[in-house]
Amino acid sequence: MSDPSELLHSFDHVDCVVDDPLRFKNKLAIGEDAYMSLRLKNAVVQLWNVYGAASAGWTFASSAHIAGIFFARTGLMAALGLGGAAATPIGWVIAASVVTGGAYYGVTRLMSGVSASRVDVIPKFINTPLDLIAASLMDMLGALSIKVAAIDGHIHDQEIKAMADYFVDEWGFNREYAEEALSVIEEGCRDITMKDLTARLSQFIVDNPDCNAGTLRKEILDLLKEIAEADGHWDEREELAIEHIGNQLTRDQSVTTKAMRVAKVPVRIARSAGTKTTSLLSRPFLRRRKSDSTD
Amino acid sequence: MSMEQPPRKPTSPENVAAAIQEIENSLPLRMIQRKVDQMDMSADAKALTMDIARMTVKVGNQLVAIGRKILTTVIELAKQFPMTSFGLGLGVAITTLIGTVPVLGPFLSPIVGPLLISFGLTIGAVQDYANNFYRASIRDLTDKVAIIAQAMPTT
Picture (cartoon, chains in turn green, orange):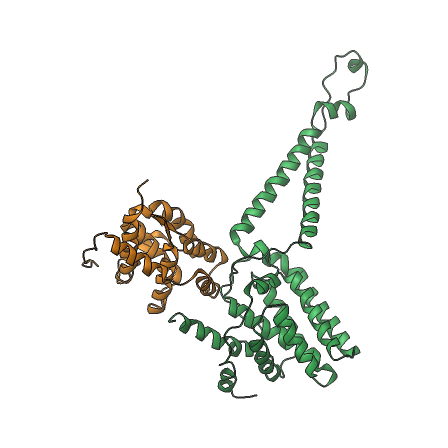
């Protein structure tokens, strides 16, 4: 591997990591959940609305009208009008409130999924320094892409171009940064296995409060498929590798994601669980950000 | 630690114009947002910081972007005192302004509580730090804002 100081100097002509911050934040697909205040607000509003729906079900089930229809008293006393008023058993009332509350929750979840497929919500700010999370994602996604591209024994120029175009067009990265970073990553990821890379990437997108793990999983697989097709050949080994990566991402995230989200506290630094190139990729810009403040 | 404070300049139209000109030379909002984007703090704290950056007051027929001046000053001070968190610096600036420029109270007081909470600070910690040399460093900011505040309509 080249001398780290030489690699650092290769970024001297690069001005920034991300040219289009809004596009980058949109790709994270975190929406309002970037803000703890909005997460709390939405949770409170959701609970309140579910409670309201359940209360409506309770009131309706325990009403005299319903009781009279389904639980009317029978017998001689009732026929003589001397029996007590009809009343819905408490179990049925509770069941009715649970059903209405649950139905409300299910319908709103379904509708929010429909909205999400039509409207992107982009937070103005995220919790992690922008350049740091960008460099970390570039490090891990870039390394994984290069590993997949190298499966057939050769990394084609079209594959490198497809990677650079993806990061620039889809994520809003600076093109010069993306191209330099990919050349650094290509050298740096030789000693790490695809399995380790996938595990680290999965850990990163679950740990980081600014990443929507589910959406990013789909993005990662779409990227890898695009890279695999970039050289015009669809290699079965690449297909198997992508399938394995997808399975590993799903397995790593299915159990831990929801628990991590519920208990999440803001991770101050996007500590890359990825390759050692992240520190190289982010160092010039972290240093430059400090000196920028003297401008 | 008490410090001798030089007398403030009386408010003349020339002083007001000079203060406004200096405030207008602050960092543009776009640049402030880029710097805030790179800071290591919560999204809520960043949003509140930009809310402060967007604050303006009306002096005559002119809108003066005092928020940009506050943020520019705190960003520059963060370079001078790298061990001081940006949040603490901003908290000191805001609380000092509230204390020295009462007319800004209605603008800044509502934001102090949420700001300190989002940065994980207490008013006590801010006041303790404000008694040190940091207060002297934001003297220029308070002077300029005080001149502007005196020129604001009282209604």
